[in-house]
Image 1 (tube, rainbow, N blue to C red):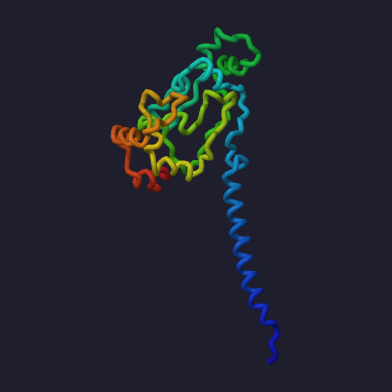
Image 2 (tube, one colour):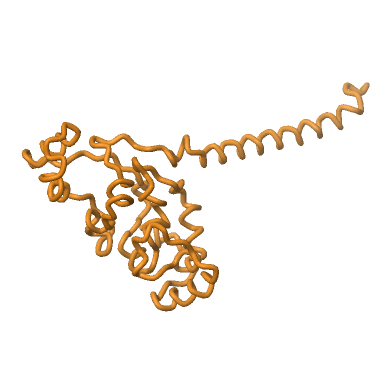
Length: 219
């Protein structure tokens, strides 16, 4: 039987397989990288809120401590959102007649909570406890960024699992003293490796194997 294909077709066939694998791999890499972009994660994108509350003004300018509004951050899984009464503690006197704050006053009159838009919204299958992180030396700005510089709130982190694992694999790099937990200007000192190791022992931080175990975050 005569040869149907030229011998050079063998090379072309091999080349097509290699090109196909490169295209498939490249396409997969593009998809994975796209999944990390702010377009998907919404990182650095300010969220519209019923009242455009400025953390920069309240935290940065007025120096209000995070725990004044997020009262359960040290004792519960959720940091909590402030009740309207917390807002009215100040705004019954300050800007009391401002049209801008009518939504707050209406909530106070009716007893209906303000429907805030959640910014750091983890999926239901991921368990996160604020209190355990705060009490173990992980500061607010480590996860939330420089909130005191945000006119409107956004998330600086992707909130992907790989982002969480960066800390869980090496918690010493972010640990700080309890007095600095809400300090937005905190930066790791040059000897953070030494300080972090000391704090890990002081706060009884679990081993990397425990921290990276699936059941730690997926329950």
